Length: 205
Image (tube, rainbow, N blue to C red; front, side, top):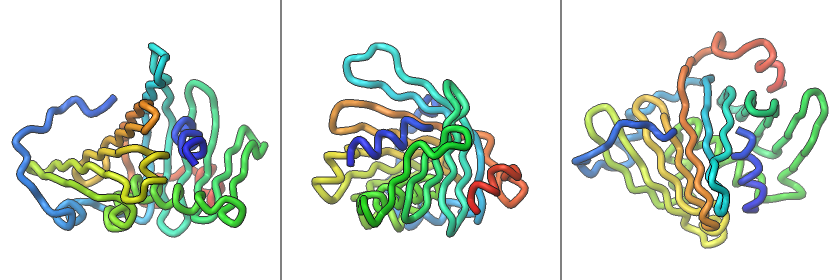
């Protein structure tokens, strides 16, 4: 499970603003601040620090979240790689070749991994709350949420998560139980059907 989750994240700078003097706020308030368009696309920048390795692994690319269809995670640098995540499967593409396919029927954990990632990118805190304990706070138009897995198996695989954002999720920080640390930031966000390229739209079919 840990390897599967790490593989998803590796396919894909924490926000510099400091958050201070937060007032406690219910998760419902943060959820109400989030825009949840049917289609959301943008750029991601990822930095993964592995235990025992000095330099972080850097990658960037594009992602699209389509309500009811899943997530498209396209790494452009340093090596082209595409992940398509649906509720019941994870497919990794290298060019036109399927490099990996994980089906929920053979790997039940796939459904949970996809659910977590889809909810993270879509900003669906209500779904995340079923698997994690959420501790949220708000300052002005910005918010942050810490997530601690409810189940020991999930905590061992994922560790703890932290999100920041406003109308959309801006950063995701993952501290794995192994000590590995991942930071993902999102920018250039666009919503609506025009946000996707024709190629990205075809990938969901």
